Every structure is written in structure tokens, then in C-alpha cells.
Length: 137
Image 1 (cartoon, rainbow, N blue to C red):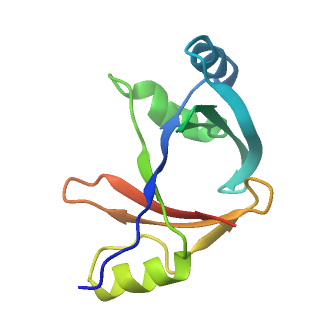
Image 2: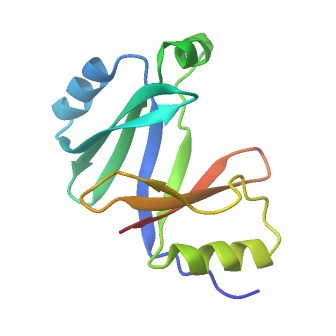
């Protein structure tokens, strides 16, 4: 198998039920809002905030009302995904596909996050955990 060029953990994604309260919580831990954007979730708008402290980045995102029931019903907290930074998303996608990993998306997905956007795709691990490969453009 060809080596996948992962350079760092880019961020950890956490779905939240109250973005304002969660952002305030992480601000108390010394994180600051470095990026905020909306995204489409089944035709409804969601909101994403990237909170950073030093080299650590946490993605807080709130789904539209229809998606909040699942988040509210869980017992413990929930980390949705760990994202790896990659310098070339297309190369990473081809390498992961050739290696036979279960890829969720049919191709890298563009989001209008950060100054120039980003592209990502996810694989699932043996226990269903999602691992995201992400290139900031």
C-alpha cells in the first residue's frame, strides 16, 4: 500500500445542541473563534465554528432543528470525527480508495470554509468511527 501523506490532526468535530453555549464554554478554556460558516444539511442550514487554541482546533457544529433530536438523545458526549490534514486531497482519496478502505463520499466534497474553502472525505473505522481527510485550499 502507498503511504497516505497525513501531516497532522487538523481538528476534532463535535456536534452541539447550543452553539452559543458551547462556544462560550470553549472560550473559557482559552479557545477563540477563528472561522464561522453555514452549511447545508438535507436542505436546511447548519452552522459550524472552528475554535482554536495554539495548534489545537475543535470544530463545533449545530445541525438544523430536525437533526438535534439524535444529539439530545445520547447519554454521554459525542465526538463525531477526527480530521487529518493532508496536502493533496485528490492524492489522499486515490491512495485510500486503492487501499480498499470504506469511503463514505463518492469523491472529495468542497465546503466554503476558511478563506479559500476546503475539500474533505471520510472513511469509517472498524467500530464505525469516522476519520476525515481534509485539505484547506
